[in-house]
Amino acid sequence: MAAQSTAQDFIPIIFQVIVALGFVVVTLVATHFLGPKRKTSDKLTPFESGIKVVGNARQPFSIKYFLVAILFVLFDVEVIFMYPWAVNFRELGWNGVIEMFIFMATLLLGFIYILKKRALDWN
Image (tube, rainbow, N blue to C red; front, side):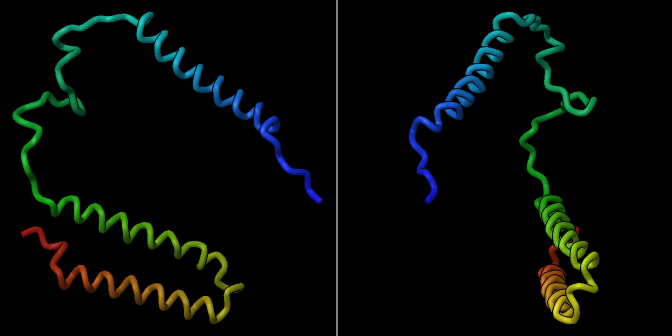
């Protein structure tokens, strides 16, 4: 019969959490008060990738970019699932081959759906 945990058993964990949170708070407060404060016009201007900002950042642009990026990530992650299958190909046998064909067919159906919806057309 296993012994049950009591509240006293969790005291070291609670103490460690308190010490960690205390360290974070003390470090943030100390750097805020002890750090240098040099506010110049160059330091306060927005800066992105070495290019000075021109115009409003809230300009609308095509959702196609995000759609293509999300679809790339989706299909890229799906391809990652093929690696363990390829490594264990012999151990999985014919059941593994059939399951991979089902997986690939599902991916192909998704890709055909994307093409039918013309999600990858930029015009």
